[in-house]
Image 1 (cartoon, rainbow over the protein chains, first blue to last red):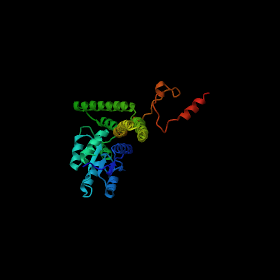
Image 2: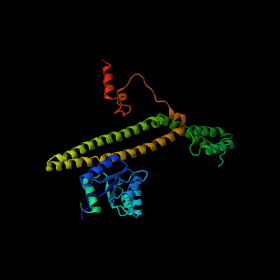
Image 3: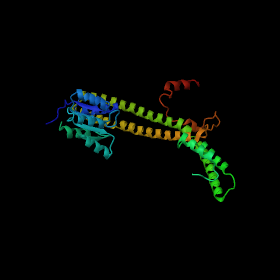
Image 4: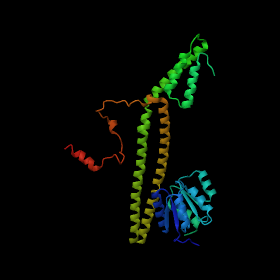
Length: 128
Length: 213
C-alpha cells in the first residue's frame, strides 16, 4: 500500500539552510506536512506532542545529537516505531554501525541528491 | 641524586621551582639554573666534572640559541594576530557562502513557483532544474562543517603557541621589526578581501575617489 502524501514529517538539523533544502526536496516529492526542529531536544518535545510518521535528522547537533535523539525515540514506547532516517556528513563505518545499533531505519550521507532521499524514504515507508 | 660540586642550596631551589611551576618552567629560569650549576662546581675539578661542565655549557648555549630562534618566529604575534585573523577570515567564508546559498535557494523557490503557470512539459523540466539547484546547495553545510574543523585545529595551535610564549617568556614577545613606516610595499597592499565589518562599501570608495578630484 502506498504511503499517504499527508504524512507528517519532522526534519531536524541545526543548520537552517539544510532544513530549507530538505523541506524543498520533500515538497517536490509531494510531502508538504513538514515541521522543523533545530536540535534533538527540540525534536523530542515536538515528537511527544505531535503525530509524526517519519523523522529525518542530522547527527551533529548540540545539545542533543541525532544519535541521542534516535536512542530517546527508540526508548519511548509511543515513539519507537516511527521510521528514522539519519542524514549526516558522518560517514565513517563506526558511525553507521552505531546508528544501526541504535535502531536507525536508514542512513543518508551528505551531500545527497533527491533520488537518494526518495529511495531511502521508499525503503522505510513503502512506495509513494 | 647528589652530584659532586652541586650544593644543597641549589637542590632545594630546584625542588622549590618544581613545586611552584610543575613541568612548566620558563626558559629564563632554566638558563639561570644551568648557570648556577656551573657556579657551584667548586674545589678540585675532576675529568668527570669537566665533562659535566662542558655538557652544561653546551646546554646553556643550546637554550640561548633556541630562545633566539623562537623569538625570531614571534610566537606572540602568531597567537595575538595571525590566528585570530585566520579564524575571522574563515568565519567570513562561512557567512558569505551561507548568504549566497540562501540567495540561490530564493531564486530556485521563485522558479519553482512559476511552474504552476506553465505547460506541464515545461513545468516538469523546471522542477528538474530546481531539484538540481537544491541538491547543489548541500555543499554549504559540508563547507561549514569542514571550516569549523579547521577553526578547531587553529585553536589547538593557538593554545600550543600560548604555552611556548609562557615557557620562553619575554624574549618571545619581541616587537615586530619595523621598516620605514611611511613606505608601503606591493606586499603591504595585498591584503585580499576585507572582513565585512571592516570593509568600506562602494559609497565610501566613491567618496574617497572623489576626494582626489
